[in-house]
Image 1 (tube, rainbow, N blue to C red):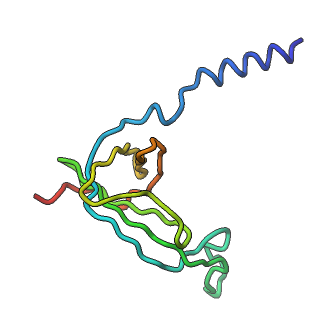
Image 2: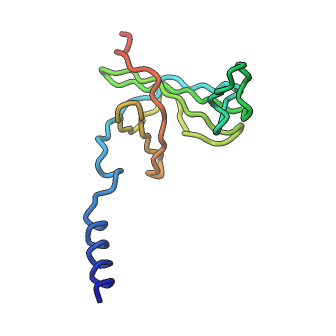
Amino acid sequence: MWKVAAVAVALTLVAGVPSQGGDRKWQTGKWVDVGTKRQMMDFGPGATSFDPRGRAPAMRALADVRTYVIETDDLRIELQDVVSVNKRSVDAIIGQPVTFALEKNTLYVKDADGAEHKLRVTKKTRPER
């Protein structure tokens, strides 16, 4: 009997927790730059080499580094997304509007289907006018 009560309490607590997506402060901006470059990236436990002889990390792979820039009236945000070679990332078209939420050094973008994509903020400045 106590197990049933404990499960009911746990479900009530989980149901009362709001989702992260609903808590975001969404705003709009415009895509002003989009780019892609390929580079070797360090991945996994070998990413930080603790070897006293300075040998390179063992786990390396070629990746697409996607770069984006979003501007609003008072903010210019430079972003980065590292994905596997030829893997789809955020669909961005220069000059088109974008819906996003900025949380410290992370930016969430909503696509046309309402799905969220997480990007890393590399720089925040005022737009050049």
